[in-house]
Image 1: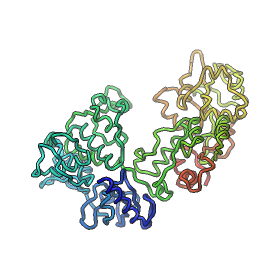
Image 2: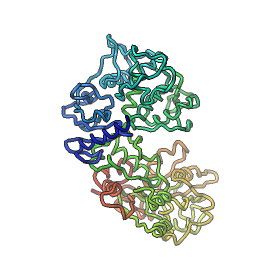
Image 3: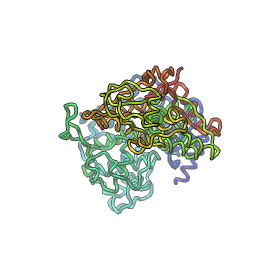
Image 4: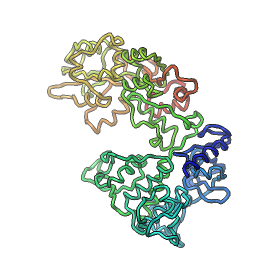
Length: 583
């Protein structure tokens, strides 16, 4: 069956795009993408009706021949809807129709009413003859599987083989279809009237998304990564499903106040309550949120640049991770579920090693490669290409209580190379101990130190500093300096980072330490947006997209480099908290 569906999908894709690659926009808004193993095809359907904000909430997709709604369809996105259909139905004509909010007579909770209306428009749930959803009724296994089967447009297979299911039962076809694709377990009984727990429905919803190909349920998972205080109560067989859906914020969660007070209000904690029975209303809320927050759809920008077909493998330094996050956010809905989205960057040194070794295609970098990395690239016959995408700068900072407002480059070199001073009064400041912090020598910040103060590696940091105050992470470079403050006797620390990271991370420091920092002027010039972009601040620099020079023309990596200096790419730069290039 799967092989036949896959062949059908490929043939239909060729017919739809007249030989173009799957995922291509083939003119007139036609766009398609094969999902997972090819059992489903996603198509982009243009919305040609005029819509106001309210109407756009309820537009949906249906088959033009039968008027049957397509359950797996997106919300309105920039003039289009996305519809995911079984591969065998991919050639059937689709049309957009105007649904509406259902006047459920027994629902007062707005989120449940909205979710239930959306599922009703998509043909997944129905009310009774009196217009009631019966939202507070406990959800049975037969009802839960019915919703999942309708969502996936599954067809009944053979006799499901359950001893408690007969052909006369309304759920006979439901049980058959659910078991055929492995959503319902291969057990002796179906237990159609048994109520469903939160853990069970979480597994059902995750398996549905995995069936389409939109997520992968880990076989083994670390429950400590779950954000619920009762995560230990989640059954082992459900942990993977919880982990797979956690980023969607669609899990059924209970919130309760704690004794901790923040800004006059009690802090809440979240509970999974995995054994709690799910109601029909909760099922509608969760299933609609999963439908909204798991599928990854390309934006118009992604399609225009070809990133819907292929994304380069991206890495970079810690400070440049916001670029990757904002890039994916600009190109895809629900971008955290994109198969190539990295949850973090490697550190600067490691990311350059990976680029040189061919493990990744593109780096976002706050500095060019260090002397050591440049030698490694030369040894391996790799030439690196640097494309400036934003302004940034190396900055130095100290404790806010320090009355020192600036340092000269010569003073900084003397501090870090010669360990020449141990009191701020020796550099024009107060009578207080001077505690210089440095970064580890394989960090991007150290590469900047090499460039500006160590004569490209010809000089070294003072051994006394390297053996003492080394900040091993970009975040600790700030928190170490903040925490080093001493009032009696007075002592102030000195550290360095990059401008954009300093401001992006500074607001988060209150969670670690109440001590505040301030930037220092260098050679009499304060680092500001203006002095960095006009170059008057002496440690001004760029951020770069870095690729290998042998990247083919029009490769995903080269297209990403071109994108980042385009208008849309520079908007990504701004959204990431960096200083864009001049227009």
